[in-house]
Image (cartoon, helix red, strand yellow):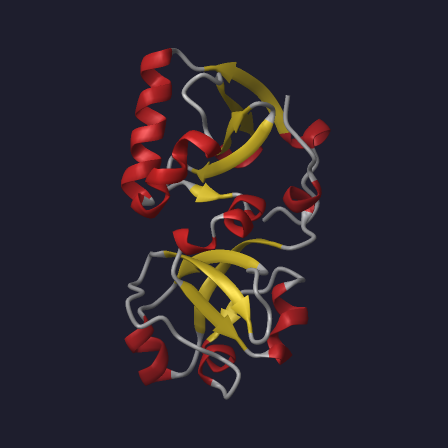
Length: 182
């Protein structure tokens, strides 16, 4: 999705939100990620202005202090930018792939069930279909991507076939390389 993302080619406009809209965005993010409530003032301070950067393909970024923190696709859920996930790794459930899946994840491929159920994989059994999850790899501290669970953890373990997680954003994609948004 963000393989060749660049600000110049993809961001079409940026709009400063009114204070009521800023409160609504913060509220929605806290509802979706309640574990970041103690850190919300650090992530998106109330004193900072929030901009929405609109991009092609109905992708919108929540930008505070010129730094993108979250994005939405087609008015769907908020996804944290991977850099934010590295600072607050507890905000998402973790699904661990084996080392053999790393090159595929880093090229934007979806995560297959066998990559999660093999010896190096690990499932968070609380994950339901449609949940936003961090994609981690055995032996590493930080997530290498994030995605949407295409099936529940129980179904992944039971079926062990097919796409388990749709890869949305990963290390070294265009969004990862993006320094800031104006």
